[in-house]
Image 1 (cartoon, rainbow, N blue to C red):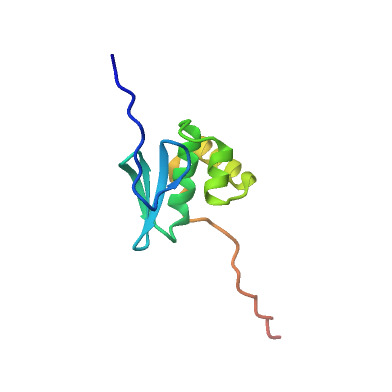
Image 2 (tube, one colour):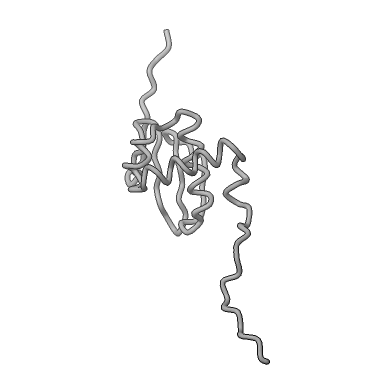
Length: 110
């Protein structure tokens, strides 16, 4: 007969679900499944954050409401990230965006 293993989290870990959590130390965010680290990134690395929370949702590790509550993000933003992840994969968050030039055009002299 197998024994139920309860998730054990260290102090200072914020829970996303009863099995999944994250902590922030020395400018790094570490995501944990129980006591095992599963992913880490710099605090200001928003591309990695968008990728990992999308992955948690797609893999069924966390529900949308749990992710939204844990991080205080907009549910529509999470839906957009998940859609991008499903359509283009994880790389979509790390591709440099092409955009319009933001500088003003100088008037041509006559």
